[in-house]
Length: 255
Image 1 (cartoon, rainbow, N blue to C red):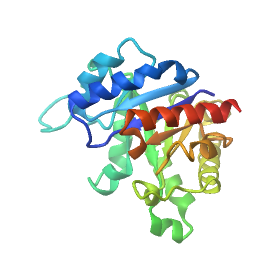
Image 2 (cartoon, rainbow, N blue to C red; image 1 turned 60 degrees about the horizontal axis):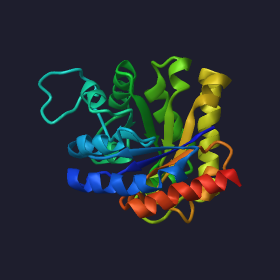
Image 3 (tube, rainbow, N blue to C red; image 1 turned 135 degrees about the vertical axis):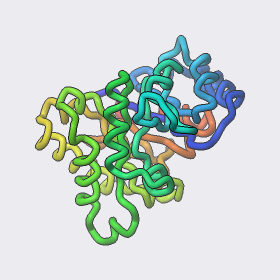
């Protein structure tokens, strides 16, 4: 299965900085063969990034969307707007949206539906907080998040999903999950999908690991049976380090 590695820039980079990043990243585009590479800039930099990525193999993603088609929703961006901007993927349910912005499971589910209705590929983020991990309820948390987000989806839709397992305690902390932690979570996600949507759907889903991932540790994650990529934060902010991470991931799976 083809790896999918996404750069989540969060609230970083102007349009000019996005253009410079993309120009530098594409200088080594041949090194990314066999890997689906995505760049997810803030909304204001989508246009600049889209212009540079237009004729390349690197795809454009967005960090969020609003489920409504249009209306009096000040400050929000619809799926149709993203699609017109050249976006192919959209991150939904990131822990920072859930825990800092107050997004609940119901809103995440509505966003997933809106993405599919408009031909966008969702990257569904799920993960436990540190106190939940310490209580030993990681699987309970993941099950709740999966059940809510996927409730109204058909197996054919689920099959095209990307699911990013991001333990909240590892995001931006420099403290990555161990390979065993990631394997356990990814195996659980796969089993859940298999049970509720069937083997064909489960086999099509690509599960990413996210949380303090970098070139030095990416190989320990993408070589796991049910991990097929990464959602990258800090290590994606410099074209050189992100390019190095993609190459390291490719090398690890090629052996």
